[in-house]
Length: 453
Image 1 (cartoon, rainbow, N blue to C red):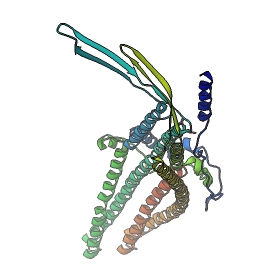
Image 2: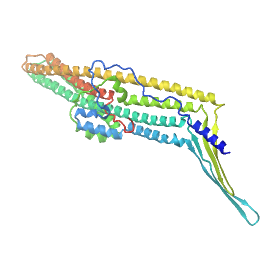
Image 3: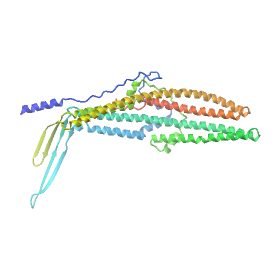
Image 4: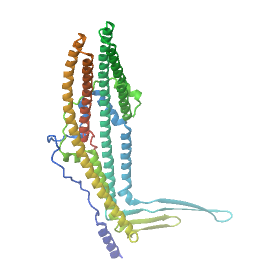
């Protein structure tokens, strides 16, 4: 009898040492180029911890971004998803291997005309599943990978919120600058009308010229509400990103400065650096890890499972049973193989999604680099043009005052100068936004979670 028990115990230990089936997850690699086109090869800084928006040197913008990081509703939803994923970790691994319930029962019966019979009994059915082939270990790996995926998803949302907030803020300041330029054009056109009215009064100007100048003035004035409305729309978007009423945001926005310009360079790094630095790539990698762990779970389910279960009953007499239970999957094996094939196919798809995410990230950085370079050159050229038109305006206005320049020359010069001034503001906006897009494209500022390496 003792030898039989020892043999059974030895066989049980041998089976229990089977190990973990299924592939181990390895971080995928990608054959990327050594450098981005149209930019020098520079080392990427610790981008995740870099608050890139501070380079605008705008205290109000810094304050708004900080508020958005704690108040934005998309981020709040992401935090809830992380908590849900962490809670699900408690349903796998060791916790999934243990089960057992305590039962209790009281029965009352009639034992005769003068007495009542009461009978109480209780039971406990514990069970422990031995993780022979690593099903529960793979389940734990998948649950942790899902937590990582939600963490990186929240990081990607942080970047998206930062970018949209900065772009909205820059657009708001740009609309204010455009409004200033438009009001300047209104003043210049009104001055021309005043001069023509004075000349018309002494028969030194025609009614046609006066009416033409008045029509141009009215046209320029009609464009003012466009910039006022655009500013309000940007303010509303900022309020939505901060999950606050517009009325509470407007007083803060009145305290800002002119359209800010970034005062720092951007280290685009090399394409390979994005694999570790972009949270959306890390999210795709974690999703891939989830599917790889699922392969191990499904493969382990093809093999026998071993559990130790018992039954303890306590009533008028006590019963205790305890022993191993070996389960062999036979009739449902085709269904289990189908689930394994499904897991393998989903892992292949997840790897493809990861590769596509990497390609999209590289493209985004490349586009941002091109846009930034183009915006920088265009802004420089327009600033030179605006400076030249300021000189031309002074000259033509002096000539018009003494009657040496025609109305057409004055209006044409003013229209061209106003157009260049407005385009200069838009070029500065484009440069500031392209700079922000490049920072986000290389993964700056999402702040690496402590739980994820």
